[in-house]
Image 1 (cartoon, rainbow, N blue to C red):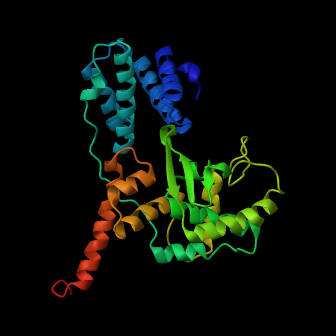
Image 2: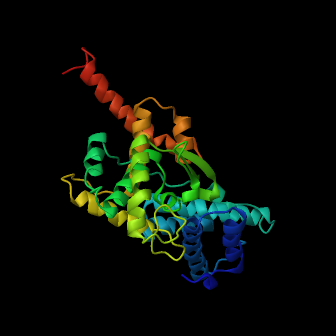
Image 3: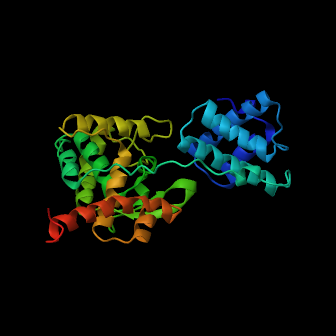
Length: 303
């Protein structure tokens, strides 16, 4: 996708997101994709982005929904991105009103997060062979994802200097370049020390690399795709009938904490969610678990 194909104001907005708002490369690329598609529509319909009115803006959202048959979640993301773009234009006093602000996002069902039950996690953890360097690395990936609840992009960005082994905590640079502290378990600590003392040196021939998980990227870090492939290989050695994704371990982390009585605000902080409403999706999962416990334990609720 060529940035040169975008109008000048759109390019300026993307630079604003990257350098002023400190948004991640992934977020900026997402906005770029939305703006490119929108710019193409404006050109086809002979509309100007500064003079587009409410009805014409609604027409674009209908076009995405009815003609392109995009999912409600995709349309909602587009609408959110365009609201942000027009708010930027409004702030620069290039327009009088943000027409996309008044358009309602399409309704869509909230899908409950998929997660592993603890016994399933134990099955996963037993697969990597700790007698090998690769096994130590794979086990540590699993342990750290579940123990900390970090995103995969955050995991592969962890540098050795970010880890305080004496306090079992890690400094994480999350979305929007926001810093937070996460903690890891005694078992993760055991595997971490094993990996640092032997496996990591063997895998990378003792080469100097600042990252906990060195990889083949230009900066020396591991790619998120590599983590996905490693976890797919791990689950292929089990009889679990689930399609794994690294994010499921993050969901499992949040679900287990809430099931054990951790309050929502604390979980929000540990996950690095900007809004507590994002964390709130996990309460649906834990409420289902509470319902199961109630029905199996209460004498008048038992079948």
